[in-house]
Length: 369
Ligand code: BDR
Ligand code: CA
Image (tube, rainbow, N blue to C red):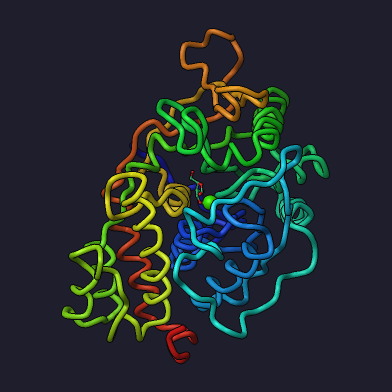
């Protein structure tokens, strides 16, 4: 598992994050804000885990808590291309951020829809920008409609989506991001197939599905470690661990840090969801793993393969179908992650997000919500 970080001018990778914030999207935003390798150009929002309005409000709130209220946030698609929107408050909480609350006075969204922002930024900086999508691919599909040359204009695209060699998490065969908008996913992958055939400089997208992201399981112990790095007292941080009935409550020095408070309150909900449906008090944290692997490719091992998405009805609806045996003879259009170092990623997350929290943000000055 190796590879040079895909860095741009001055050693920093210009990145657009496309999100449906979402608890693990929130962690991904914190991870990006905590990573000196990333020059976060913009965050674009798409309906998915929760409706668009909540996604935008959550994204603004998370950036504010991270001390990055300066990053432009663009609202995007409020529904999938063809299907009606489904959301999953059951997984992410009524507003999408678990038990966390948004700080008052968060900034407002930037002008211009997400798809236009993606196209404009890519045109301004051809070959430089890495797009990372962490939700349904609707905004990217709309951007491709506006600018079919987008695969040539972007440096690369990395996505969280799909279940390539294992079961789905939404139906037996499908993963959530693909299931919300399979038509968008199919269109995006097809666009890259065309671009890869036409332009030798185009790189295949990197696809991280559940096969690897479900190997990243965050535990209360890791969250306690993060709180300690953010200067929480050992006694307060250790209170996060233990009996699930009382664990993960941000009291004392844990609650006094706005970022740690937000993370703990959000994750408590996510942990309860996983305890109910996945049999452990902790959480798969898909989206920050994707950001981490974008700047540290050695965290994953990939294999090139042709991937298509089933958009018809039935048991395979929204399934990502990878032609591992080259039966179709179609050229690979995705570098699919097949192995990973989840332990290294989890260490990185604790260090980085804990370090960001230790630096303090304006939200520390506000009373706990
Ligand atoms: C994906 O679905 C969403 O609920 C998460 O934010 C993640 O992007 C995992 O299937
Ligand atoms: Ca997401």
